[in-house]
Image (cartoon, rainbow, N blue to C red; front, side, top):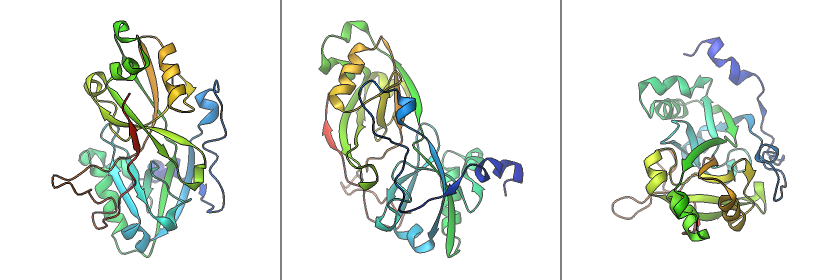
Length: 255
């Protein structure tokens, strides 16, 4: 059991999630707006039932950071929990404390607490967890828009958000190669929201930002998820190793 001192950060600054309240993490933004003004990290404590945990919640460990994040949220969880949210604690158990037991230590702890038989479960949630990854490209490959993202080893697509973020189109990494794969810091499913500190409004705007950037490019990313196929071609389960629901796959544009 984590100490009171370890739990303290999760007991301050959190507030209950109001299902009728729209998230302010993404405010209306425009070209030229800084990323820090547009994307705000939020913290909530969310209470769910065991039935919701078993049938409407999917979690995974991010391959780069080791954070436990949401890969699927069912209909009754919408507005409370969204794909890409980071789960910081379950029933007061801090998931990062379990990383010492292996890459999936936090996920295993979450699974244990969610399946423990308690009728009501409290989660500490972080929304819009922003991270920055830097890639350095060759100046010789910066000639056309098609070369720009390809030179970084990124294939990108677009993904429509749910009703919580009406009208917001997310840019999602659909595949990696070259520099991106070599860096080991970007995985398919990551959502590209900024370049060099500037918000990406849409795909054409992201291309223009990349063309204006130097050889070292800072990519600002949020967590997202693409359902990987099993060897037999069937999409893997997202909800706690029991459910066969899957999240919609994004429309992909290779650039």
